Length: 318
Image 1 (cartoon, helix red, strand yellow):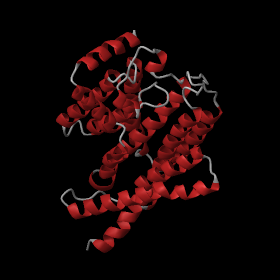
Image 2: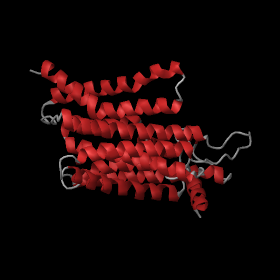
Image 3: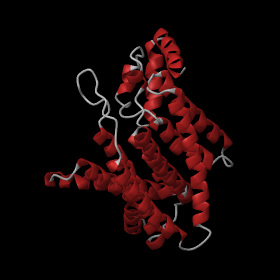
Image 4: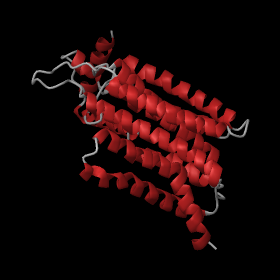
């Protein structure tokens, strides 16, 4: 049934003008663009610290859970399952690895959807607009032929669950002193168990017509190490920020301070993300190298960035 649905959508897609397919590729790619990290950082550093915390937790936890499911189920892409399917060529570059659940849909929900949900009472129209975008991203993955309906439906359910779990977790953190330490320790333990699991579990080794493995297990493990790094880095940094910095968001009319924080913070993230590259000469396993790069990114966003801009703004803004 799922393949029949994708074939039906393929017939519609190929009968429409080419710009329609291009438009859906653009919509889909927005959800996978690394620049999306700017939104939670802008909130966290500058405009609404609690809103930024919410998006950082939602995004990082959603990503790590989605990769855990992907590497557990190991479902192949729809065009691998059925040779009659012809996915949109423009969408193939971002449609790698296992199919279930949809990573694009999960990211759209846990960043854009979470953004709208957090401000639903203050700006109901924003919440509606964000969820319309989420639905478009989810539909685009089917329309472009790179995910089955169950891929996007499960991603939606999983990610919405993450939003509610994040809401409850952050409310619980503020009920008692020391709860944030428990969360940080739990995040570290979970990450270690998660990485050991994806390293030690068996993976399917089916071959394609050329004799290559359909999905490279190491590539999928790398994706898990990336998500584990961003998750643990963000949560550990969040705890240390709460403990040792405790910065406040800026006045929304103080554009100089907002711009300074955003520039300094993004420079810090860019530097920290690239620092682990110096370890390539040591022959370090690419999986652990990617973990360090993404840990540094998450840690930079939640701790080092705030540490840097709070130190700088006292000297620059007088």
